[in-house]
Image 1 (cartoon, helix red, strand yellow):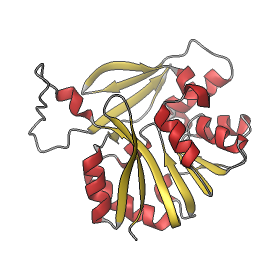
Image 2 (cartoon, rainbow, N blue to C red):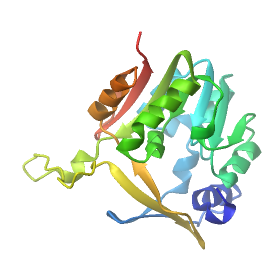
Image 3 (cartoon, rainbow, N blue to C red):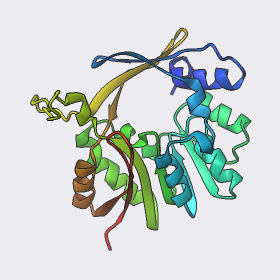
Amino acid sequence: MKKEKDAMGKAIADFYKGRCDGVLRVLSPMFDEDEIPLATLFRSFRYMPKLEQKALKMAKGKILDVGAGSGCHSIWLQEKGADVTAIDISPYSVETMKERGLKNVIEQDFFTLEEKFDTILMLMNGIGIVGTIDKLPDFFKHIDKVLAENGQLLCDSSDLCYLYEDEDGSIDLPCDGKYYGELEYTMCYDDVRGDSFPWLYIDANTLRNHAELHGFKMEIVRRGEHYDYLARITRKD
């Protein structure tokens, strides 16, 4: 990613350097404009959602933190003595993580990675980088390549069905042929506007079915309070 397109990374870098008035805007054709509170990207373990805390405690062996951002997950793991590598396509984020003291940081697209890991973390809906449902076969093919023997993928996501919930509690999903969890986002910060990108929120049953199709098994480790969940994916025995 070029720095002139790195809206989120620039926001992370500025916040770390002490600027607290920056606004990271999130644009989507499906929703009203939203903002990401930058302080949440630097949260300590104590203030992380229970799903994230559970995933970090389950991480073991050689660990990869995908889409690490400010490095909050990797920093906690490193402080606990874990062998953790943070990866992100954002040059500003990578610089910030190094400044924060992370020892192993890579500026690289996850899908070009070839090194193997015992635990792959994709938190804060990190599996969203898959983009669309039809990219899941390529995703699991790559996971099979970079996941060590007896390794685990820990990822959280949310089922967006609640967006289509009627007053009586029934769910009326759209029938346009597109999976309802496929979104498109654009990040903006000051005069930096990133390129639009697809982002996937996937319900647990769909994730489980696709995992099974590609030689993996999925178990729900913990459910959140609002259609979110933490999943553990491993190879079939």
